[in-house]
Length: 176
Image (cartoon, rainbow, N blue to C red; front, side):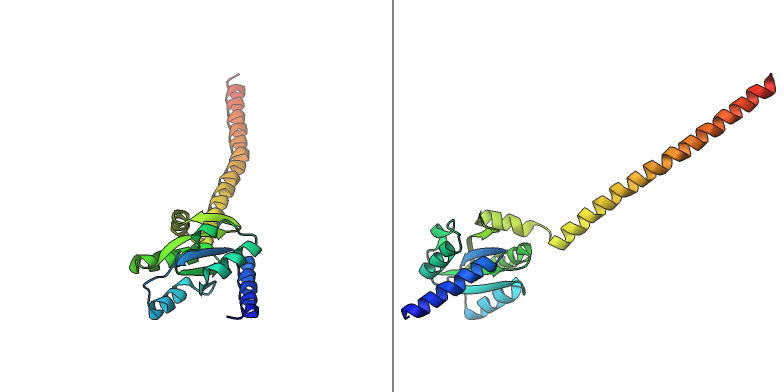
């Protein structure tokens, strides 16, 4: 490859690292082209899976400010650049790796922080962003409901207490 081609490839990879929320490095040795095509489909629309050259990708990652991945650039490497929900892509990689043991998750980066392969698997075990947000909204709604009941209980209790006092005064006033 000519030098300008390498520079263009590094620039493109650098831009992908900068524009991605996360990047996951994998080893794809032993996977067929058809299996790689299925893997790309399983990652969804918010991830791009690319087979890359280690040296150029290492240079691009360093130019993007990511130096924690340097040890992972050995053997055949492919990178999943995630622009959407990283949990969804991590699940896609994990599920594909279960069915195809030739896919090995090496590690990655999420919002500039390095992740080990085990941390990526833990990320895949999380529920999706939408589910977590709906659970949070449900918790807030429950707390608001409890607060509303508490605020309604105070005036109601006050009214019952005043009625009880009136009834007691009426009894005592009628007895005297």
